[in-house]
Image (cartoon, rainbow, N blue to C red):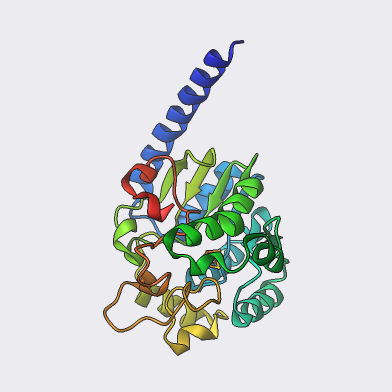
Length: 262
Ligand code: SF4
């Protein structure tokens, strides 16, 4: 088969997946996250993974999967950029102990120190281009490698995180990575998540009690506390015109984001 035929088949297959997932997203748009999780796990196991930041939505999803008795069917992974907050690692230990699993550590090829040596300092201090390069090396590329060959991934993305996520469906075909992407808490607001965490006594990152609303890497530029009334992700790369690290750019929405967000 010629490479032209093969790539036409790939496009046809991607369009079939897109159509299937658009229909599922419409059907499940008002469903409870637990129903979306049950559908996703039954449809895509054994190749389904949960991207876990140990943020508030991740810990809720883990608790829900545990209560549905489906946690064992999902590979939980986290991106260890080498510069996560100590509180994030402590939250991971508490969650792993509480629910009885070990999250898969996904890491970049370059260590944090190795990257500073290779690039002669911190890329994140070099404006949007440096930040994009750093996120690509430490998050986007390791995650692409990890997701390769899998059938679906679950995220904690929410429509209210930021304007860039306002139209987020509960399921879509992730063209950039070639697998289904499921967002069970897309419609949840922050109050509902906190209500779930408190009602179910779910361990959470203590940085939320210090004014942080979206927790990423521990550098002065990449994560800071957020003031009342700001977007929840306003504390990520503040002042850099960037709200996404690039791991949540799929083949469709990439066209609606400017290059500084990749
Ligand atoms: S969030 Fe900051 S430190 Fe983390 S990968 Fe992106 S630029 Fe680098």
